[in-house]
Image (cartoon, rainbow, N blue to C red; front, side):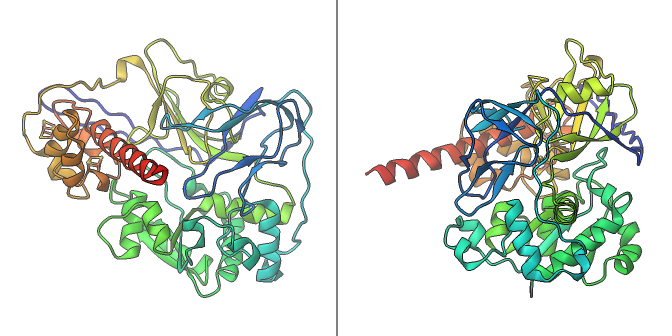
Length: 435
Ligand code: SF4
Ligand code: SF4
């Protein structure tokens, strides 16, 4: 997706390039970096020390409820040091130097997923350390708050996170059979919970016949109507929700990639070590690659002969809601569906221009925030006022910034308000606990 805008008036020009259905496999990089933390899960404790040799698929860290993060490569633990999540948050992390030939950790296999019982599937998943809300009673005692909530609805996303990315939709094509078997297994282990599959509207009829037993939800291919949070809110029958709030209310969101990856791990007896990423690089056609989890962005760009020049912008994610990276060696995460490289002369520079009160941002905001006013509160550090105006409801779709003729950094202002509010709440809680 390319956009061009001019100060004072707007000439939106959106061109959506088709992503090839072919998936290019990237070689293992020289090193990988992983964050040892996941939203809504208990803290991860490292199971390895600096200098240890590890095999591909070996558990590196685990929670008390036995959810694990596995090594995507074979090599040596280089450091147990903080790594940055795509949004710049510093989290506990690990770096592995890939200095040996690939050696793979084997797990039990389930020869025929279609014939496996729910207990066999749950046992296999637990051995693989795949977070599973249908764990045994023994594990339930050590689960985090969100993990303990009974799941009554599982929503599987087979739609892409935003225009220009082609990752989750690949599972309706290249990996369709594997997705069907995996969904069927998921349906069996969820018991009475409903399994819903979000697909583009045009795919509905085919999906209903190919994925029996799951409820197919047809989703518009207009952005931001197909933004995941809005799709989730629609399924939950509410106006707006976050993934965490929905999880605490019994809705679990999985990606088609996660579901298919789990099914493949069970049948192949190997932990999942790769991630699909759509790479859009300057003038090159977008391509989807399969790379090791934690690969540095630079290693993937090098494979695709994409050079990053001074002034170019590199983002993890797509052009609408991705996060700009200041270091091309930053690792891709398990949620990075895209890498977007924007050439220096194509970048729209945001700055703190004065709002001209045209109202476009508020007019187009899909969750009804009065964006101009809320962003102004955040700009002047009036965080509580911004929160009272609904900043926390922002789904970070990027539409307000796209339509703003003054090029104000509206999403950044709202992110700033929400993050500041969260930090002050955490500080208050810590102070109360200390008393
Ligand atoms: S405030 Fe902007 S980024 Fe947030 S939901 Fe509204 S339009 Fe999207
Ligand atoms: S912030 Fe909203 S109201 Fe202000 S100039 Fe931008 S689009 Fe118009």
